[in-house]
Image (cartoon, rainbow, N blue to C red):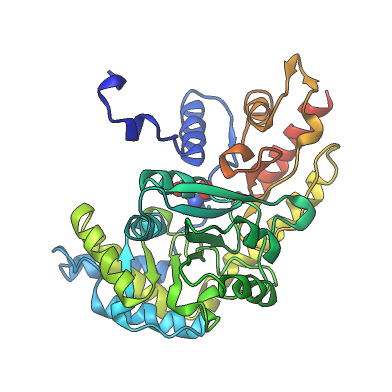
Length: 396
Ligand code: GLU
C-alpha cells in the first residue's frame, strides 16, 4: 500500500541512527549479544536534582497545556544560560522551547526555507539535517570535508558553495559525527565570508556544547555581524543525560522565534510540561554539576582512540567534543573479509554488525562515504569488548 502514501514520505529516508538503534534492540531481544555503539545517547541516568524537580512538578499539578513557546520562567532560565555560558543576550521573545533540538531545527528550516532554496550542510553532518531540508522542499547542498582537514571547512570552501539560491547554512560544533570543534578564530574567518552575503542565515547547532575536551566552545551568534541572522539551537539531551525528555530550544531574532512558535502551534503545541519544569532546575544549576559525565566521556575517548589505533587500516582524527569517533575505513574498500566483499562504508558497518556484533552507523548517512561513526557513550567494558571484537574479525 505504499503507493497510497505521499511522495513526501515515500521519498524520505529512514533516520540511519534510529534505524540502527532499532536493529540493535531487535537483535538483542532475539538473544544476540550486540554491543550498541550506534546511538548518540549518554548511558548515565538523569541527575537526581533534575528528576526531583520533575517529581515536584507532577505533585504541583503541572498537567495543563503550556504556552506554545514554553513557560516564561523557563525561557528566562534559558536567557540566563545563554548569557552565562555563551555571552549571548536574548530576551524571552527570542526563545522557543521545543520537543527536542530536532524539532527546533525542523521549525527553523520550515519557517526560513522556500521550495528551491539551497541549504548548505557541512559534511559530515548529522543525518537528519538533509531530510529536514528536503521535507521543506529545499535543496541540501553538501560542502565536503574529510579527515585531512579534521573534518572542517575553509572560508574559501564555504564561499565557493554560496550562490544566489543559498538561504541557510547549518553549522554544528562540537560536531556529530566527527567530534570536531571550531575555534573562535575559525568561526570568525567563516563569518567574514558570510558578511558578504547578507541574505544568508545561519543555524548553529550547539547541542554538544558542554561535551568538550579542551577547545573553548564558541557560539556563532557571538560574532556581532552574525547575531541578527543566526539561530542558535541547543537542548538538554546530551549534556544532562535527558535524551528521552525531549527538550530543545532556540535563541533567535524575535521575528524568527515568532514564526517558529506559529509553526509549532500547528504541529505539536508546547512541549511536555513536566520536562519543561525539570529543565529549569537543570539550567539554573552550575555547569560543574554535570562535569563528571564529561570527565568520563573524556576517559572513554582516550580509551577508544588507543584501542582503534591498534587496528590496521583504521584512520582517526582526535575528536575534541561530543562522544563519537568517525574513522576513515576506506582502506577496506575492495577487500574481501570473511567471504564478504566490502565495497563501501555501509558494507563495512553491516560486516561489523554481523561478524563482530557491534552496531555502528555508516558514514554515508552523514555525507561522508569513507567513514563510519562509533559512539563511545557506552561503558569502558563495552568499548573494550567492542573494539576487541572488531579487531579480531578484521584480522581473521
Ligand atoms: N542525535 C543522536 C544521534 O545522532 C540521536 C539519534 C537521532 O535522533 O538521530 O545518534
